[in-house]
Amino acid sequence: DGGITQSPKYLFRKEGQNVTLSCEQNLNHDAMYWYRQDPGQGLRLIYYSQIVNDFQKGDIAEGYSVSREKKESFPLTVTSAQKNPTAFYLCASGILETQYFGPGTRLLVL
Amino acid sequence: DAKTTQPTSMDCAEGRAANLPCNHSTISGNEYVYWYRQIHSQGPQYIIHGLKNNETNEMASLIITEDRKSSTLILPHATLRDTAVYYCVQTDSWGKLQFGAGTQVVVTP
Image 1 (cartoon, each protein chain N blue to C red):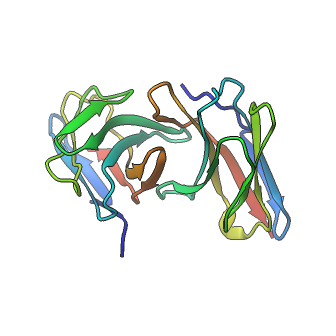
Image 2: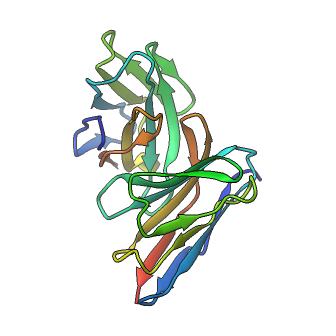
């Protein structure tokens, strides 16, 4: 089936630890996105990539890093510099502004 | 910051039409209006988008006013599975989607 997969569904981070969230798509989309969602709020853009080996910062990129080595994959690393990482993280891929979202990863801090 | 304004919440009876309003008074001539919905703890789902003409698909209809400053998403026969947060989304000057807090729609039996 075509779609976007994210793993893991839940992730726990210890203080000072970097963690990486996986996002894979088989929709053959050039563009991919990472969003953060806090309780009761809308989505905020962290990073996006419009083509392989290229990515741009979104509105809240501090404390995060990404890579785009393959068209299908766009992993997000939450670094220790991100002081408030607890949130729901959503990956999307798309054509122009029509985006298709994965099921999300919920990150919790121990 | 989000450039659209939506009511915080609304209720709808099962089987009736749900009409979800959205104001986007700052929209420019070539910007589309997108609608997504998010069922609790899931990723958002694309519903529909439009520029100036009314649009319809298997999920919903989108009515855009002639001045393009507002629109209404219509779910023709709401079911309990339509309970979700509905986002009316506009792009920013870079073409990126700007999500607000959306409208929590609760469909009741």
